[in-house]
Amino acid sequence: MRVKGKLLRWDDDKGFGFIRPNLTGPEVFLHINSLRNASRRPKEGDVITYALVADKQGRATASNATLTGDKLKGKQGAKRSNRRLPYAVMVSFTLSLLALKLSNYISLLLLLAYLGLSLFTFLIYALDKIAARKNRWRTPESSLHLLSLIGGWPGAILAQQWLRHKSIKQPFRGIFWLTIIINIAALAYAINLGMA
Image (cartoon, rainbow, N blue to C red; front, side, top):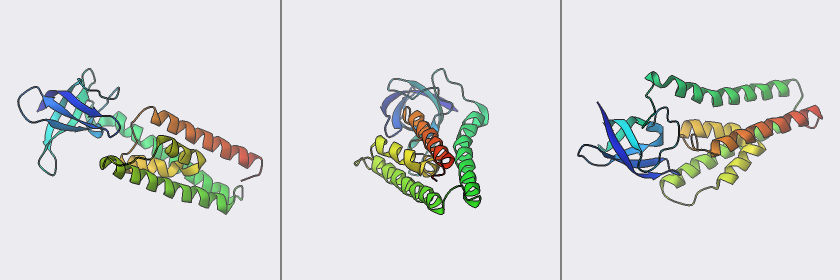
């Protein structure tokens, strides 16, 4: 059974809020990952349709939620394909780096630098997610972008997908993909000059 309600509070940085059901009942928790096929970010006052479920602590939680005007698509096919793209880019890049190393186009040091930066970036994302949950000091988005720009973006992709952190927020996503393009272009230029 699907229920309608109005979004009372929304914290866009943390990606969650609370819905007041149209029928009587307690406020319902809504996490950004529960929104399906959203054409935009939610805001206070939005009418949301959702399935009512209970979380591990027995609290009322929204599942398979949609914003007014958005349609719930079966099996979330579009959302799944959107989640595959980052993995495809990361795996293709990693395999290309390995092939370049085996062909002696890049040094082992460069390969290890990408690996180290990726691990470090993943760790920074994980710490930022913990900080967001505990309302503590956050890592500035500019620092996350800088880590991606200098080569930590494969780790950022893993963190975004596995930890569900910074995986939807705009304009962060657009800038993030721009840092990837710049990093790959700079690497290609360095390889072309024989500097990698």
